[in-house]
Image 1 (cartoon, rainbow, N blue to C red):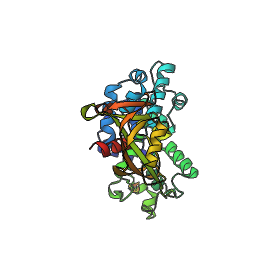
Image 2 (image 1 turned 90 degrees about the vertical axis):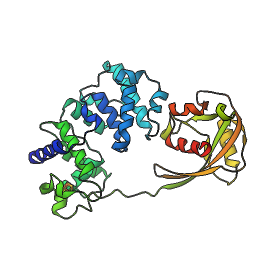
Image 3 (image 1 turned 135 degrees about the vertical axis):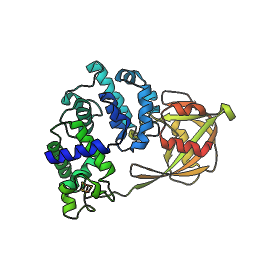
Length: 348
Ligand code: SF4
């Protein structure tokens, strides 16, 4: 283990990419970066991370912000539940720990939205604790390095990978070591065509020795996406520059807290469903008979086909969950990428 650590740290010191969150040891900034990086590419995260920390430079600033402001900084990044949990976790840090992210591992793991991965990342990178972390990149590297041949996602695999990560982390610079493992997975030990010839662990790698690099890790069984047909309505009031659009605050777990269009599953191929969506939303309006466009969108294993309808002279009572927005306001409220695309069908 010591030899693997030494080679990997030596390689990391030479090869690490210069990323904004690697220039800080601030546990709050590292927390923000780790939450944003879950299921999102580094290039995508960088501008969001910088904008987020400019607006909310410390836990108190984020704790004081309202949810709309937080979600608007997350608009387009997806997986909005992450933002709400980060917000809740940071509020707890302010309420319980005077705004200081706790060094104690148990206290960190008890925060909302902080699982073993995030707790380990903050612990090792900010506080130099010998805590392991396992993400998709680490799983791939360790499955190849130690020839773990059970499927990704199975509990036996997860247990083994965490055990190997925990065996590797003790020693000097645990934070750098954890980042080195992730960096190797991101840049060298990639899912397809890993660059084994330039890998610092070439001589230690069991998958390489057994010619199993292409077959490890064993992928998790794939579920084919469910097809869903929906109707969405862009219901507006006014014309030209005075035009405004009704949006509803979603309660669906995937989009909870975000603003979106009235939407309903489709059962027929005329405006019947769209009329139902308006009725359920409590909006009366003059609805077009034909859809104005169709959008295909893949979301969390659901392949959505959405017919967009247009309604004008739309009226309703404003409430906490139903509001009229000016078109130029939409950039500063929390709306999902899906809603942005649906609106562009009507307004582009
Ligand atoms: S030798 Fe190849 S498969 Fe093994 S850890 Fe390095 S890059 Fe991954």
